[in-house]
Image (cartoon, rainbow, N blue to C red; front, side, top):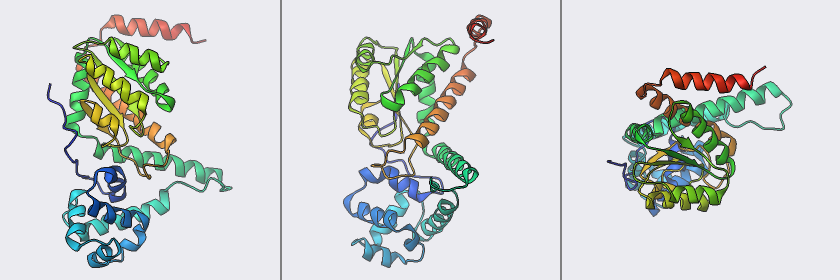
Length: 291
């Protein structure tokens, strides 16, 4: 099976340069990283700067500034600046709210809109070829292990349940050692879906390596495209992240990853002729737990 290269830089093709810079900051060359840091530190200032001003502030060159703009999907500094001005304005209007605000309705709306923007960003960041490969791997697998630790653990459980409903032999276990052991017992034809917001969890990366050593196809769901988990997996579904990589943006990333699991489930459902016996079994089980 052909997999997505983990060394290929995926240019941002949307309209949110801050998301692209934060997501890909870890793998930028040093000179471009200085420019990215200057933009992330004072995005409002950049909207009124010339390319020379930004280059001087970043202790870099105008050529480096332009190169970074092109790397994240814009054909020059001018268009980058227009997109940045739009994003800064949207961030002021729809960014994370002050949680000390007295207006509960404002907080509720702001948080939900912020989550919606994260999901919209992911639609542009996730590579269609990688998504298609992930769906194929899951649909054609003899069995699928969903793995994740911490706040990703419940998502692994949810993923396994959703695909089990389609008649796919999907499993998820809670204990970390049990996950690793299960991964080691996978075989050629198996698939393993690993979920981690940061992509830097030692346990999750270890499980990915165990699954790969067993010749299973490994699929990463993460917010960071150049994380250790991404490097350890065959297929990478990177959703991006609007916040500094050092910030634990647990709630927003969970919403994005839940939506991505839903998209994978929908993709698999479209390719699988789910039999009446499966629907009957699901209905019977669900009926037992309802009044």
